[in-house]
Length: 230
Length: 370
Image (cartoon, rainbow over all chains, first blue to last red; front, side, top):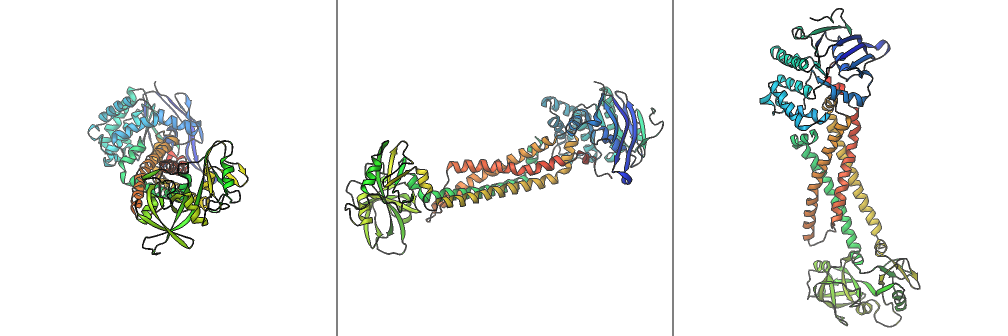
C-alpha cells in the first residue's frame, strides 16, 4: 500500500510559561508516495523533534500527523508502540544496536518485537544484509562492527518490517560521506520501489541534495519556499 | 529470544547471579532439611507407629512421658466400637552404658515396651524379632547402633533408676528417634519391671495405646483420650516451637532470596535503560521487555536451584557419614517444595524491575542531545 503523510500545524513546546521552549512551531507539509524528503537546518532548529513526533516517539503539543489517513498524534502509549513497530523504521543517530547480538540478530529482533513469520524474517534479513553489503559481516557481534557497518545494520533493521515511513536521523554522523551517499541511495531506491516514504534529517547539504525535496527548518518554523522540489 | 541470547552471550554476569541463587537455595534447603531432621529426631518413632489413633491417659495432656494408663483404661480403649486392633505401649528413658561399666559418655535411649505379634511390633531390618518371654533381649534402632558403635549380637548395659541391666541386641529396626533419643524395643513386661519395679496389679500397664480403626481420634473416656498421630506428634514437647523456628528461618531465606534477586535484576535493568529505551523506540511494548526479563530470571532460577539441589544432597550424604549425626534429613518433598518456592521467589523479586521497565521513555533512543 502506498504511504502518505500529512503534517498539519504541528507544534511542540517544552516547559511552560517563561521557561517554555518552542521547538517546533506550526509545521505543515504533505508528501507523495515514494517520496524521499530531507529536513535540514542548523542545530536546535527542531529537526530531530519533528522527526521524533512523526516517528511516534514524542507526543506533539498541537497539530496533527496523519499517516495513511490516521492521526497518530493522539495515540496512547500502547498504540504508539504498535505504530512504531508496524509502520515506522527509525534509524537513530546513535544507531543503537544491541551489542551482544550479531548484525543478523539485530535485524531479526524486529520480528521478535513485531511478530510475523520467522522464515520470512530470515529471508528478508539475509536479503537486506546482502543489499547493504553486509553479507560477510552479518554474523559478527554488533559490538565488533565499525561505525559504518553499524549504521548499515541500523538501516537494515529499520527496513525489516517493511515500514510505511523510513526515518533517518543524521546518517552521516558515523559514515564517511561517500559510503553515506551510497547507503542513502539504496535507502531511496527501497522507498521508491515500494511507494513508501523516507524522511532524513541532516545538516549535510550534499546529502540533502540526494532527496526529492528539502525542507528547511529554522527555529521550529519551515522556511518559506523550502517545500519546493530541488 | 533476546533475553535468552543475552544470557548466552554474557555468561559470566549471569553465572554470578545464578551462583547467588544457588547459594541462597542451598541455605534454604539446608534449613528445611534441618527442620525435617529435627522433626525426625523429635518423634519419627511416634510417626512410625502402626496406628490410626493413639490413646493417652486423659490426665497426661498428650504427653507420652507423663501418660500412665491402667490395665482397665487400656482395656476400655481397646474395647471401643470401631477398634479393629489395639495394643499397649510403654515408654521409659534409660541411659546407655558401655559394657565396661564406664559412665564416660552417658547417652540416653528411648525404651519402648511392646507386645510381640501385635500392631506395636516393629519390622526388623536385620537379626530377628523378640520371642515371647525374652526378657534379656532388645531390638535396637539403626541410630542406636550408630551412636553406640554396637551391632546385632552385641550386649549393652542400660542404666535406669539406681540400677542397671544388660541386654543382648538381637535385631535391628528402623523406627527412628523419640525425644532426640534413639529407640530400643523391649517386651512390655521388661519395660514394666524396669519402670515400676514389678508387674503387680495396680501398676500402670502402658504409657499409651496404639489403636487401629475408624473415627477414633477425638474420643475421650474414662482414663483415656484418643488423638490422631499428627496431633500426637505436634504435642511432643518442643515440636511446635521448633517447627516455627525452622519455618521462620526458611521464610527469611525466601525473603532474602527475593530481595537479592530483585536487587540484582533491578541494577541490571538500570544498567540497560538505554537498551530498553531503544527496544521501546523500535516498538517493543513494556510487556515484551519485561517478558525477556522474566524469562531470564526463570532460567537463572532454574539453573541456580538446579545446582543447589545436588549440592544439598551431597552435603546431606557427607553429614550422614559423620559419627555424630547432624539432624539434617531430606525428603523428596523438601526438594520439590523448596525448589518451586525458590523459583517463584525469584520471579517475585523480578517484579520490582517491572515498574522500572515501564518507566523507560523510548525518546532516550534519540541519544543525549540537548
